[in-house]
Length: 400
Image (cartoon, rainbow, N blue to C red; front, side, top):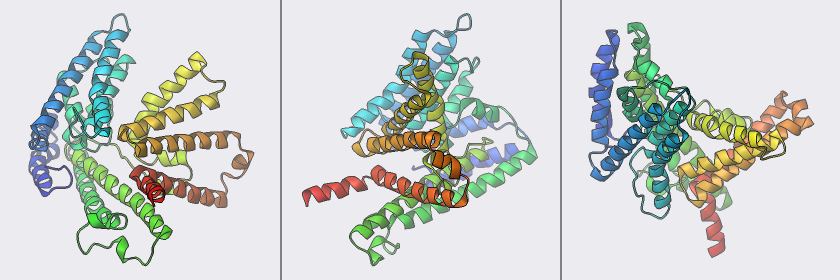
């Protein structure tokens, strides 16, 4: 079963959501039933791949052992760093192994949703280390780690926010509102991902769409113009496809009383690259900001690795975005995409902090319009890196 794309998924979701709807509309807690529904949905997800199921089960066992060992290691208000580091390495090891071997075509220890589940496990460990999580039951942890609606495509939820919803009963009126919004999000996401994204895909990869779908071959363009159309079409497709998945994940979460955070906020309106990453894949960018960028910059300032705060911030952007690219995959295209955005964010930071021209005109309409247009081109160029389009063009030029 493929989540959010196959008819069997929607049939299973409808059947399993019905008891949750009854519980919610009668003002009763949904959590216990939600745990059962998640178990069933995950069984369906991994039913075609016992190997992936085994890898997933091993990951969960290791994550549980590391999390509760770290939680138990607190003494006199401090966490045992050795236990924390071993637990953190154990949680990250399967994802690192999978990414390294996937780049070579093997993909050892991988399973559907490994990236998102790893982010959840790591987040809990770090917040235990920081003293933000001092109590956690096994049932709560497992529900957060394995909640089916967000496991394959995000958004990346936070444990304390998730468990506040899971352990509460929203009340009839509040749940009725969640139910309505959830159904609308499911419908909107299905239209974006299954209809509009398919249409957009025809304009950069005509061979992959059904016959009769509007495609690039129908346009009277060729050469460089065709590549420009492909670049824009891919950017639109990527947004429609991913936003569609995210909206459906939000909708499915709402049915079970979980107010899943949004992943997109009008990204095409962004006026600079920092604004873009506050609007695009929001839960990933905020996760990296909180657990990578902020920690790196604090360590750099404490140990005086760089001469100024501005240089520290620029280095932080580079580390942050290269890691983001590596999270997508250890290929030239993804790593180049991460480095590209790291450089752009660092350049944006320097420009906004040092440029008198920017400070003088940043609120003026003409400047904001110009900044929006430039940002759009930079974003589309980045998507060309992400998709491998530029690699293909360069390879064609070299070989031609």
